[in-house]
Length: 288
Ligand SMILES: NC(=O)c1ccc[n+]([C@@H]2O[C@H](COP(=O)([O-])OP(=O)(O)OC[C@H]3O[C@@H](n4cnc5c(N)ncnc54)[C@H](OP(=O)(O)O)[C@@H]3O)[C@@H](O)[C@H]2O)c1
Image 1 (cartoon, helix red, strand yellow):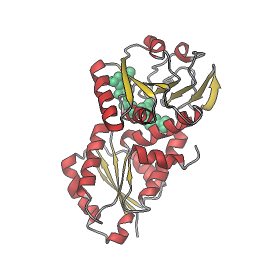
Image 2: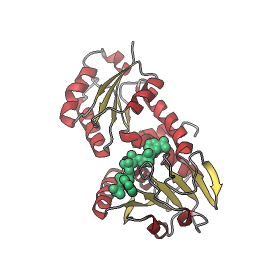
Image 3: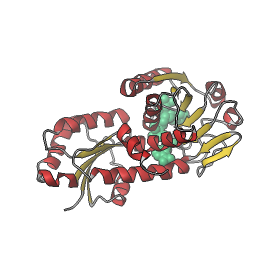
């Protein structure tokens, strides 16, 4: 029986990246629905759950993507509400690669910190995007004191509130309008995770290199210039200026493995819900 993936994407164009990864991970056909809003979800999901008998439902699954994290959360909520009894299929949320990328970075950070971030201070620069929101949440949930940055205080406060509501833990916000302010923002930090957008340098080398107490620095931006000056995209635990460094491809290779494993997991049963925590559990079973 064909493995069918329904792609519910909140953006105007359904993500080609997500489609390619899904095919590579074993989906036979992808049915893409772009610009999906919560009221659309029930009927689309009914198309999945009422067509194949219960014992074959594991061959159909739902993938939720799009550029907006809160829109993705709302679509997942709507999909779960459309399930009842045995009429359900597995579902995965990964808006803009948020969960798989954040999980890959967090697993690398925790391992580089000796297996625990509890009580450590982590700065997530540009922590208001999909990846930063999920990474900050997972780190706060793991017991780190997390500081996210945003260019605008109200946006930072909204993101902090959303993270703490979803994941608990302790999250602070710093308004960062200029790369020159980053050194001050890193005071007392053991970990730096840059989740800034493609092609924007948010952290200069002088802010992090040889900084007392800083142990791990991660840059997720793969597009030149580097988001963190001095970290190379292929860095995967490279020691630079006293800090263990990870670049976008060093994290990205693991992200791809997690993303593919998660898609494959969708077709193992009809009842998986793959969101940040469950994707984190799955990633810990993979070698990174
Ligand atoms: N390595 C991988 O495998 C992988 C996979 C997926 C994504 N990524 C990368 O991960 C990073 C985060 O992705 P994302 O989708 O969460 O990012 P995003 O939404 O594009 O941007 C994150 C935040 O950056 C801030 N920002 C936007 N434009 C800016 C500018 N010109 N100058 C300074 N700050 C700006 C915004 O925050 P404020 O408005 O609050 O300041 C925004 O919320 C990106 O670099 C992406 O390419 C890497």
